Image (tube, helix red, strand yellow):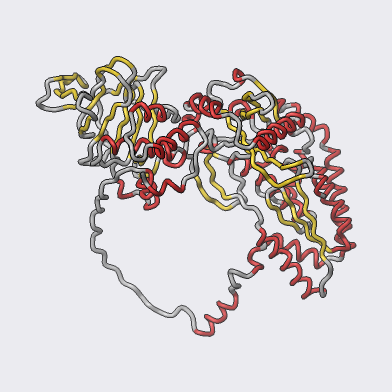
Length: 607
């Protein structure tokens, strides 16, 4: 078994968990086809819309390994989402065909393929078909000039030979015409092959394949490049004096100042230029103007919310969304789409909307939304099957208590019946982790495992969302102290953290996500039963939730910094404010009113 996979975490969902157990329990034993089949049938169904053959309601298809499409070569989503399942498939191929090289595997359940050639497979490679279920017939017809079985293809008679499974796996050239023969029973086979152009694979992808257990043929070296004639010119760009002048303009990259965003430095400088009394008066006038705007927009705010779905209206009832839009516009914050996205709710799948303010970084989805929907039933049944008591009864009780608290707050509805989940809806397992102690006992945080339910795998992102690390906090304080020392000799500083209460629960899901991906399951230790719930808000454990919330938190941070000259940093739902001690009381009033006006709830027990 490949050593690299020992670093992978133990899986939680049914299929990967069974694969994990088989690989470890049978490390020195042969795997049976029945064992492998029982695991592979739990993988998500990924039937192609461009299927070459006939399918039925019970047809099934799943792939892992390398792919090639046009000029692109990469890894299928299952290499990352289902590594243990992928490794189990690879091990069974290598067990049945020890010398066979392959970079892709696929499971085909009751799929009848028509005559075709695999033009995307590597030249000179072989396809292998290994039976997993019991059936009769169902061999592979392969074209052959001396063959005795003739098929009519595009009006022409093509001779070929039918290869059966009596002697074991079937091997044939992918460049020959081939097709599936009819069968009786349920026919599930494991197919292995090698795509072309594997020399284009990124070294990290090649290493991933080897770690999962794929056996790669030696890469074909690319053709040598033609001789190229070129010339170089050498010279000195600047004189020594000019080099020194240029170096003097460049600050050290590790200087603390470089960690403080420019707009935050500008806010600190503005605080130090203006006297405390004048600064407090400006902030008071600004907040009074915002209160007037809020009153002016009241009727339009009510009209806006009347047009929302009931689940979104419930979550956003206290938010002043039109005031948010006006503040976004006045501050010049580029993420004006935040208003519409907040009103419409946030999706848990698909390509996430761009803010226009964050650094570009594309991370593709590992699974398409259509694949997620096709595999939803199988994934849902597997996850519900895993719901049960954890090794720690305290965690089970804590998860139940936290869920009931969310129900009382209106963030979650339930328990509900399984019939409330649509056929293509997902169910996510909720589990708990201990997070310190309270007077009432251990604090348990509930987490919704959207990675296990494959919802996170269906998210594509184009930006890298930031938060302010401890280095930024320290650099901000250092910059203030140094600048103040130069300008006015220094004063006492006051630092206070403002924590948003149940931060993710203050933003809604969009209607499609609420309809299909808002369901989660827990084990109730009191009734000793499995229970299903449905949430209206951003779940903690969703990849999309993190991006959505940070967009909102970043806007809150930036608006107050630009319009109120508030010096603060943010780390997810914690906002750390720095001000002079003499203005600290006024600053508390201003920040409290700021959050209150926009409808964001604070953790009063932490103020």
